Length: 543
Image 1 (tube, helix red, strand yellow):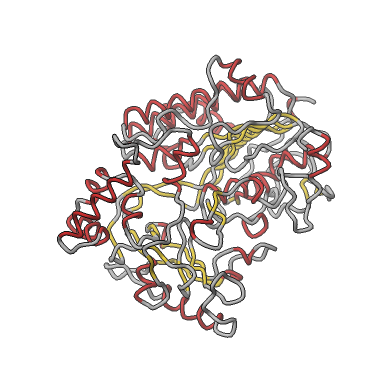
Image 2 (cartoon, rainbow, N blue to C red):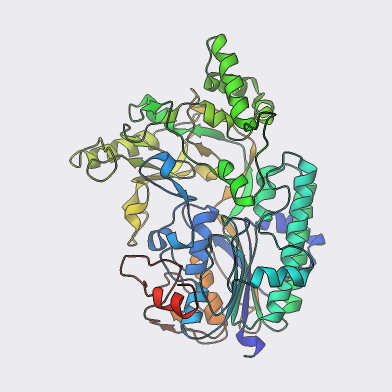
């Protein structure tokens, strides 16, 4: 196939125009692409989280159509929650549509693509995979490691380290390796569309507050873009991000405390569930630090803290709240591991609560009898409970007297896809995304925050023979990226993609087509949609 009928999508997690502009002089590859191509703000899906947004990008559908709303798929109890995988994403991806028509693809480091599914071409999974997870074909990671002269890693070295210098070096090394890996795959494999992703452009803002470190990470990302463009001469190039990033200086909103005060949440000392922090050491293969007796330091720290505070009549939540008010919470968090405060606090008893907020969700789930385990809200009361919750949350004010939420809505006012019923019953958007919703119970409703977190608009930049550089673009949707990638590569846009291609963006006609049953994932989805996967797995030696 000719280069002009090939498209490479380069995704940078949380890439934001604010920082592309700020560091423009030291980002020659981004600057060149922006100058010669087209660009626009890219509206993320709701919620604007990595685990739900990247599947929206690669399937061309919103969460109510692919079924993933956050990092965890909810179970009956907190301990049953599990990190999402490709098999939770219930729609075909760009590469699945290509494989269905015999076209190859290259996929590198895209989040929520594990376990690696059989495709025409090569796929190496990214974020949320275990460090040791194989790619497709099964030998591709060994092949890639040999080609780059070192073991290929999904995560950086020192990923969970508290040593900032070690973490920073690991980030920079990981991005550099990602660029060399992308270069090798693009030059060694056939592909119609390639999708390459860099994660640390997000992580750096969550783990550092140092503008020069931000600049270094962006400069390393720029080098990846340069390698990709050199390895794919003449091809169309699309740069995108799953969401933006920016300063958040509003409040931590302890929503379950608010719900507890309103009579919705019941608590327990036993109910604990997984968090990203608690899962990360397992994913990266980096063991948690242990004490001399082999016990995890986090557990020992919590135990020691709880005993000491109990002697003076305080709970860990009391101590954390006091630290917040005294402005020394950063010191407390430096002394304890990420999950220590959460583990030392009370938990939400999901089975006994009428409504509650889970980690990484922008919404409240109602515990409905006959629908949810141990449901306490009768179906007859459901709508009234939702109405009361909407009223409660819409009227919520910060300590400064400002609205906490930009909007509060029932889920059907936000989603209309077949998996809308998997979303929270009541949804909300923090005002200007300047507050962080925290599910922990610490005895306080609000605490000031000064950090970086996700913003709803990311980046879209594109250039190449298929693009009309004179196009004046407004805001695009993240769900438009997959249709644009396929159409710019000369392929039909699948009917089932809810995103589209803006008029005038491409210099070629854009057509849609019904691709029929398209195999995807490594397990049958079981809902009658595109579940024809087992035959393809057998054909490719998976079962």
